Length: 532
Image 1 (cartoon, one colour):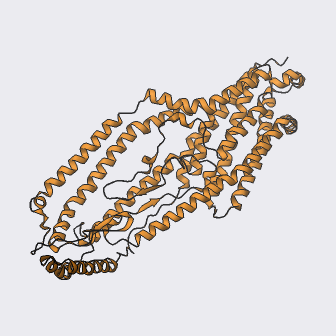
Image 2: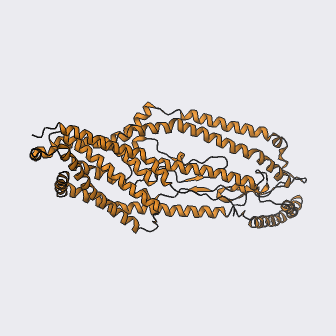
Image 3: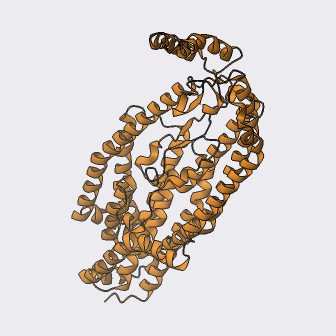
């Protein structure tokens, strides 16, 4: 009996105008916007490859270890076409520096929750809007509509169990919605696979399968919601009014209202207080460095050699936009090596302390507030569906936190690599290309200039200056890059499937529970429903 009822409902649904229009709109939107989304991904991937290539080129130019400050770029996610999530809201690159701990999550500029009333257009938005409305339109009159037409009384007069009727209509609704969902997904995948630079891994295919399953569960929840109101009202017009009202609440009011409510219930601490603590820590760092390097400051760093000569062109442009010491006397270079051996570990330690302080602030305030907002927003099936889609697409906050954690680990690897190569930052290779004999050669080249200056012979001074500049340029050209053949490369496996599955289980379980709860409420309401 259940299948007979379901079969009848399926045939009726397939012949309705709303089903035809809903399916057509969904297919057209997928056909129009999927190429746009993929073109945007293609553009971002091209930019990523160019930036990585430019970064590799800079690595080959590094002449002192202090200039080794590579930039780590986050590869765009191919499945972001299904759900953009935070893909464009958070930064896509971080710089590895001694004095700063990288944190990609800090690149977000989104501070106003009301700016997100209308989310970014992607496949999840098409399904969330078009398919959810179609689910509600299919369900809102499954009971009240039959009562108004008088067919419900006829059906119940044949001694059919009420749960048979309700289960049959639920089964029919799911099969009906499965058709446009499958067509839309198939079309989207065909367009996806037809684009260049798209190479889906086995993990990607599993994620796509889970996205399809999560979409079906979401549409089931929306259908059950519409069926519940159909069981609570006697007229389909009233049922339609209620389901559309709550659809707006689920889609707009709850997601955005949750941010405001969470900000009132759990306000964020003062940013000025955090800034003051960070500045105090930086001042403490400066004071500690001044105390340790007091002997250098008092001794004037011995910048002059025995003849009172100072190095010209002290700094030269290096890799990654940094500069390095090009020429100075041996006494100063030795002193500067000792200075770096004292100061660099302090700067690394204080950078870690500042990062821990900022992290505590984020965990105790921003993250807790976000978790509260998410908990409130989970009363909306659309929010649960958004969370599922972003996690499975690899564009959720958890994925960015994983990347940020790996970047921090890589910074520690880089610092240890430089430390081992420069004898704890004291070797001249850390900060200068000036080698033994360069200063003496510079002094010898500069003697004609000194003699011409004493004689106040401007013509000879100009000639001598040209010789010096040619020699300096020659030395610059001769300065070899470090090679860095053994430096630690950044390795990040984008998205552990098991971790993603663990993150989706709570929201998926809650969405399934909503389905069961709505169906149970519909069943209770239908048991008391007046079919006359």
